[in-house]
Length: 340
Ligand code: GLU
Image 1 (tube, protein in one colour):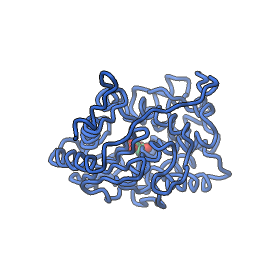
Image 2 (cartoon, protein in one colour; image 1 turned 30 degrees about the vertical axis):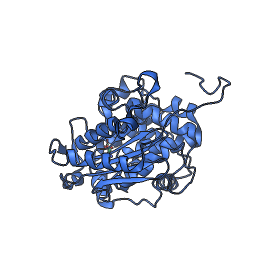
Image 3 (tube, protein in one colour; image 1 turned 90 degrees about the vertical axis):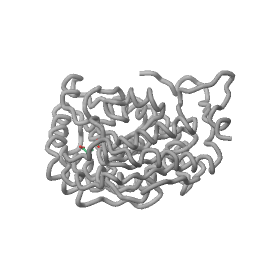
Image 4 (tube, helix red, strand yellow; image 1 turned 135 degrees about the horizontal axis):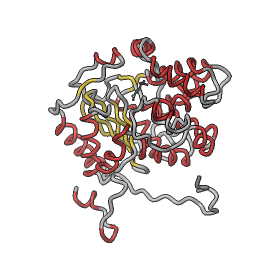
């Protein structure tokens, strides 16, 4: 493990800023219009209630680190956050117990296998591997310090609400639908227990995890939550320091390698931003120092990533100059120049 905080030098950051608001709004409108007619993909149905989603629903929201809001389409439609919750629970746990403890208990390497794999754990001595697959997410939820599962759940709900700048509540229909069918996640909980990787009761922990996945959000909420991770942990709407800037850095690092299921490498190659998606069709992408993107469209590709969500993020990444790996000769900023 690298002792990157023990180097004895102060952490400097270098990020840049979004183009002026009218330019961002124009590009958000363009991105939304360009992919509205795209009907590729299928709505998830392994959680029965998710199959009821409207395939045409499509919202796109960008919230700057300064709180500036740019939206197009149906940004107020509520959907269950699903796997996107994993990113924010991971941040809360890192903030509570520290980077090193989470690294040791959960891990930060991609499995290359589907999000609900049991084999990944078996092949790696019971390691949950990373906090963005179900095993790692259940192990991470278990690390929220609490005396009972009820208290743990309330801390998760309140923590995610602080990222969203509003009180989040559970979609009870989705929660009941997943609870009736989540046999595999319960098996993952038991397997974690058998490897000594879970201290609280495994089924109660899976229940907290299922509730966190059923929290109801909008594309707008995801953009605010992403903007908080982009803003050194300060929510740009409330001004509250939700987690530390070091925790944001750690969370975005894990999202870059593990956030988009087994397509995380391809996503980073094409789009160059840390991001997390969920099977209900949400995507959050984060541009450090600049802002958060929230997208919702329930049509998914085979890996479980929203098809329209990926396309609009690619469009915004290029047009707004967000790709973390892009540079220009002499340090020129292509994004602002090309939009003036
Ligand atoms: N609650 C879902 C599950 O555990 C989340 C899946 C996802 O969004 O990847 O199966």
